[in-house]
Image 1 (spheres, one colour):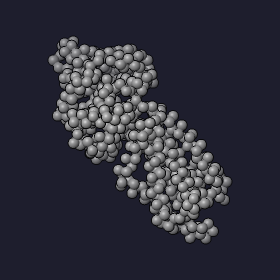
Image 2 (cartoon, chains in turn yellow, red):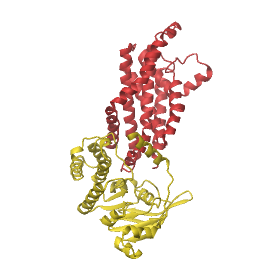
Image 3 (cartoon, one colour):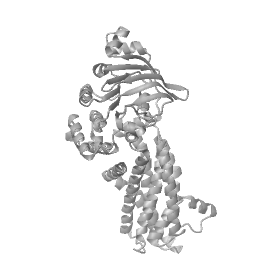
Image 4 (spheres, helix red, strand yellow):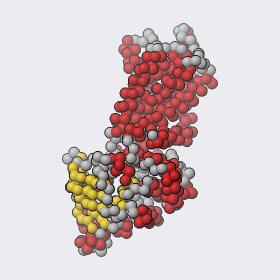
Length: 261
Length: 248
């Protein structure tokens, strides 16, 4: 479903993604783990047509994200690292807008919106403006929206950041269920190792733009001789802390947070 | 087509839901209209130019449309910040359609806001001279709205933070307003000023509004119309190009 070969992305002198290759078969839940700045989000941006690769080849369901942008976009759903809902619209309107942009026929749009809102326990709040939602509710709505157009692949970029354990637990339960019932391939990144351990069929660990290990959680633990995935992860990537400099988007985000209070 | 419609509708929904903002945005035009309208009225009258309220009303309408439409484009900055922009940029819709939907939505909102000010002007005592040419006023409002919504989109596509926003406000939007002849007649100006006002697209918008509403014009309604059409097409292309270059 996803095939990546010798993918490279440079920003000036800095190589964010350095010659990585992997494949994700249909229906698999694949976790992409790595410290901050390891290249996870850059890889997702390239897979989701937002960034052209410097070199290497990409394939999503047989299509090339760098060239067949619109066809590729129809194939996947994505939940970004930070929220991407329209706060001034209601939950139902956000879904409706998404459905129209993804060419979902009206009848299907209505049916699937209802099904997904009920599944993610937002049906009663469908006519509430999103700005009145809690963080967990917004996340649930974004994931519901990602499923609306029946994508073949769902990208989840740190979807549980800042959520309480209850919301995280519920969120993964739903993702697993939809993975099974709709055969959606899931590509996720997270900093919570126990989540990857629990939901992912296979895991790739990326550091400094390179894949340093790939396999099932069990295989990674055996390879490093550690008890838990977290320990295995630290053994693979070291214990030094990576500092990313804040870019203008981060600064804006901080300001947005201030305004919201 | 559906994508354009739904994004246009989004702009309208956001507008009708922000009642506080609608009322707030009437404040500044009202000040210009009432304070300048009545304050400068006697001087203007003595200079033999007739009623200043009659003169300034089309200018204030033009100003309202300018501010509303340019900010609708710059609102891209907020969509970038609150993340919604990404949702539209990964959708399987050509960016041109997304840009057109947004821009037309912003232009429509600006026209609604301009109409609201027109009504306020009528209440304050403004009277269009001829009902036959008054409908052309709507046409000029639409042209001003499209020109500046497209310009706003072009600017908003490149804006990364609020500092840039201040810069645009002080060095672009306010000069466009003050140099447009919205507040003073464009005849008998010093050469340099006269030249600059002719480079300002809003000059032709306000002049067109005056031609339609009070039958006074500097350039002639046909010239105003032609110039605005050319600028609108140019800026739509420029805005679409800038929008297609957005990277997140």
